[in-house]
Length: 142
Image (cartoon, rainbow, N blue to C red; front, side):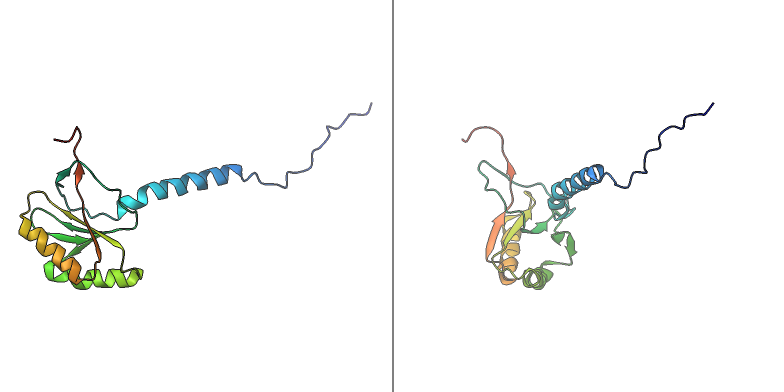
């Protein structure tokens, strides 16, 4: 008696790329969500409150002043107020956009004069569009 052989299927020559594409798209989404968070410095800042707030462009430059006077340009710490203008000028020249928004994040406990000196240093560094970051106050307007 002759034994039957099971039919053999040819080896699979194609690779299913759908799971690879799914994983790649999830990684891209994670990168897009977390990238704006990386541009802010780690200095602890208590922002002043405001009722109305404009939306910020995602490609702004962040200039931060902490309550103790420490400064940072985006995520890079600065030595002092004298470093603001040259470093900001270099950053604006590197991005080739003098109209880029520079957002000043100053602690609410800082005196007005300190924030004004920081704004003047940013203007000296070539910033044409300046904004001041605030935290949103919930509730109605007074």
